[in-house]
Image (cartoon, rainbow, N blue to C red):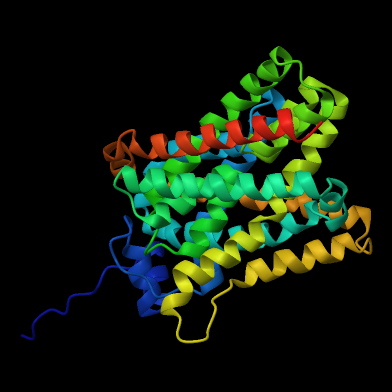
Length: 365
């Protein structure tokens, strides 16, 4: 008697669906917890999860900033740090890197829409020379303080340049120019935290000091514009003193912003050009883009709507880059750094304030 043949049980609908898939898709269908390595996705698709997280965090920061008057950069930084636990998810890495690098570079280019050469020329040669001197000495103070605290020159340039020029925007631009081999994510985040705290304090304290010293609108506006780190807080402090001081503060601050591009070019040449080969200067493309957009804006051919959209887009892109950087930052290294990085930023801040105050009292009248 022949052995009885075993009739297989009918397949369930889920089993039939699984068998109809390709081998790769079968592995993905069985991978409930992300343990099976998936095929390499397209590059743009790999950035979507991380960019989604960055966009949501930046929008939340913008909402808080608009409704409660808090600085956008500070809110983006704090929300990014609150989301730092997501940095361990490999699926977000591509998007976070794209936001902290590519979006940052385009944001720097669009900052050029804030600046015109006419604004710089309106200050006059004395004020312009004072601004250049304040920026140079402040960066030098950052370098010296960094060396005294045991840091290298790159960190000194990062901290001093952020204080001297335009706060978080300058810090992000300088970190991109210096590269991750010279400036780590932890160091950049420390500078962003220090800049945010000291800029917020300066916005409150400097107008009070200007009132106590009975400075004129012109002198007070120069003091706010030449010493306060963040653009919005610098202009806000000026307008909190008076309308005239606010206008002067805006022009002085935007002149400092205009110095971002030459500073980046010098840093690229001095610190990175040496290893780029003989006769080759590694000026970043976004520095060239900054100059070009500022030049076009100075000619008056840029429509007002385009200029406004560019400024808003620059603000959004830089805030997104700050959010992504904070998410990627290694928090253990931040805690291990102690107070030394803040001392470097504080020293540069004090020097910038004293030099600006001296210029406001004895040069700008």
